[in-house]
Length: 533
Image (cartoon, rainbow, N blue to C red; front, top):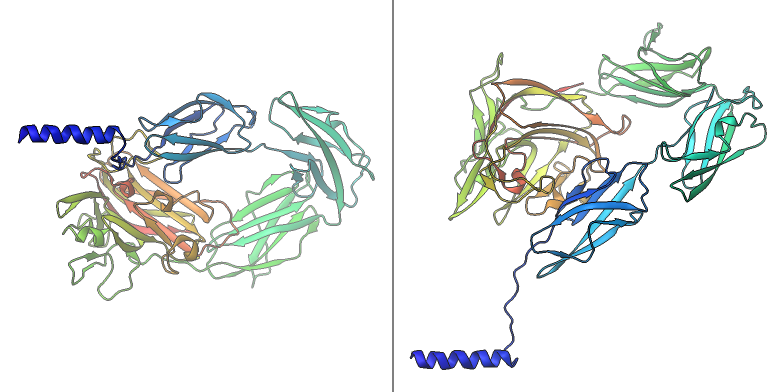
């Protein structure tokens, strides 16, 4: 029998050597990633997205984007790149890198660069217009402005410290029926001919925007620079004006914020420069939006044994990962009687990170609570629907948190933002709030919960810097708290004029739970969340 087997083995080997038997055993699929990236002149660490296979970084303005030194790039072990690093690259266009092992993955490396440019004239109205493509700078002045006695106070059209101008823009004084030109040179061989314009405008002061929130009004105006600029306001039924304090001025533009107002109230505002005033503008402040069950007093257990963060028969507003954990007879989020100091309630929310096992298979799950609902399971991965309808624009989220920060003992996937994360590192807790205009048809959700995150697909993960985010605040807990800790988490707004359609709040005992990474010892308690207006 052994002899027969030996003959059979030799025959098969001979057939394989002569090509009579195809080697159709498939190669394993190994995802090839860029793990670390460093370029000279980065303003901040590059953003590496392993799902989209992209690297994005921003350059300091003095760096020649045509000659960027990419100093250090590391890849998945065994990957070979068709681009040689380190090296010098023209990053005006994207750089494409193919990583190959058994398969090939194409990565895209992109650079952005913002050069601060300005043109300021004494006595101008509003901000100057800068056209960086056509190389035109335009300032506006009042109709009675002496166009033969112009004083340019500042001009910058190229990278700081390395740009030369000929002639010097500050030397131009007469713009009566004419424009002036200056040659802007930098990086040794870049020359741009800039056109400088000063145009008279038949107005002394004007509002550029008036944005009314629930308890504050944001005011923006343009007026003659170098003179007294300000705002006044009153309730619509009052005859007495109140001067607005803390007006900020930059050249011909000035702004302020009126705080401490009443919601759903009519107000009148005006802007002035010396004796010139705008027509009165009437606005109405927004209504106050209160978070339902933000004291976490209402809970129930449904007929499937799943703990829900709302009352029996109540309207769901908060969601958790309990639906997925229930498949393994596990509960991540539940009420606790360990309440914050001074609480008048009975319960807080307990968010315990755990490893849930199902039919011998286990995955780590972060204890969490969020605005939205659990969307279902795709295998052992989850779908989470984030967001609830709200037009509110709070300035902060206030609340209480108690956190036990565990050591990472479960490493499912390594987050692209933390490529060096490993077991033994400390876990991180997260509290995040965002308001924005997320459209369900774009983010895969519904009108009630527009943003769908698939934990198997990193490209669906929530991006706090995404284009539809209006305001966002995030608090990362990197160590255990000493008992309960009171916090006020401010939101950073990109615009005071945009009105959101939805709000997202997430509290998680393990920040990288989406990657099935964290500590089974991490426990977060949260209590009495309120929106600050």
